[in-house]
Amino acid sequence: MQSYTWKGKQLYFADPEGNILELLAFPTEAKTDWLSIQEVGMPVPDVAAFAASLAPIPSEFEAESEVFRFYGDQDGVLVLVKANRPWYPTDRGATIHPIAIELAPEPERGQQGLVHTSPPLPYRIVC
Picture 1 (spheres, rainbow, N blue to C red):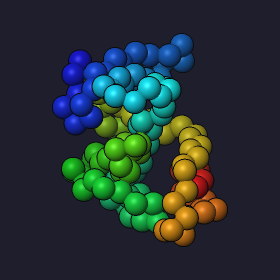
Picture 2 (cartoon, one colour):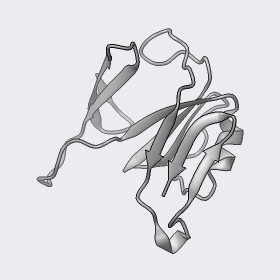
Picture 3 (cartoon, rainbow, N blue to C red):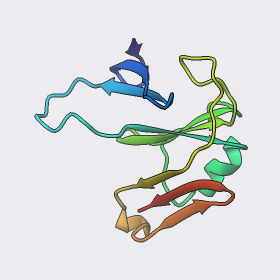
């Protein structure tokens, strides 16, 4: 499948536990490691409220809807979706599971040592 947002190709598959995974391939001129985490799906009860709580972390994307939003930049995004929204390309609802993410800090924005948690959600983001 061709992605028009990310200018790459995508392959969706399920891991042995049934989690939906997406492999993205991007054209590049640089000879670098090809593997990186580009997106992390984060189901939440309220997309707008969760995005607002992420304010110390910059985002170049605007809200797309009340049930879906990219948050981050071209180097990596959190894919915020309303819990139980069908997860593309299946009809299965997105469910909440523990996630721990470590981001490269942007010291000029005061992010060094930033720890973001969202009780009661089992999410932890560290810069």
